[in-house]
Image (cartoon, rainbow, N blue to C red; front, side, top):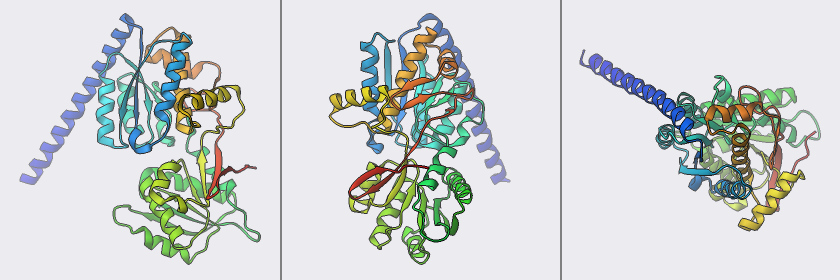
Length: 384
């Protein structure tokens, strides 16, 4: 009986917390509307990103865009940057901080799919525009949220190019192995990858779902040594992916490994530079693209920071410029006006291509790029 009463008490307290949070979010939305009507500028934008962990050029892309918008007479923009560390509890606190700020109109983020899904409900109820630049899971746009726009391709666009880029065997059907982490994101990716391989007449000869808390990666690699697939598909956290790459190469397995949406710099730190060979991976940006917006962006980025921009610099740069253009077109900093301007305006041309959205805020078309990383460097794989 005591255990039942204890369980009921925990349930009641949890329910009370959620009810109080929902009431707070509704109040935040009301405060935001009132404040926007009285004070239309500046455009306050929150940014949630794993800056320290990712070690990418996301912040520099934002910095360059903010400087250019100001110099070109665009809307005044105030950025509030927070490092979410790809951690849910940290991200939740940041999301509530942003939602409670009546000055804020939009949020740019996230790298982690599960976090992006969970915070999207907070932003929707708080009526805060959520501009997603990194998370690719399909689940994000299944709820017809008004305040959500995604500027990166969805999951179905991720896997098919990787399948088409796999090396073709001289005789017979391509054989492949699949290893993926036991969590929703990786399981969804693995499912989509297998569908794409089936369409490509690939033959699955090994598959393993693993728990990163209990599985020894060396055991999986030893099992793979006896299967000899033409290509290995791997999906998991950066830490486990790096460990898998290092272990396969240390044990003499040089089979191509295909990855989705990973930071090569982060993986190299985990796996070691010598292990990063015969890696086929997906990228969402081509620094050599010849559209005028990208040529301008690369030149400015090189001059400003002394290096070429990466994918996340381009995504950040385009996202902030897109928000500025939406504010200019709508003459507003109200989140709903910004979301509508982005979704329903003609296609927008950025450094990272042409952005066109459907009513759900999902991209309708945008190219992806498949690259082969070897010890001699990387090269793009032409897709047929």
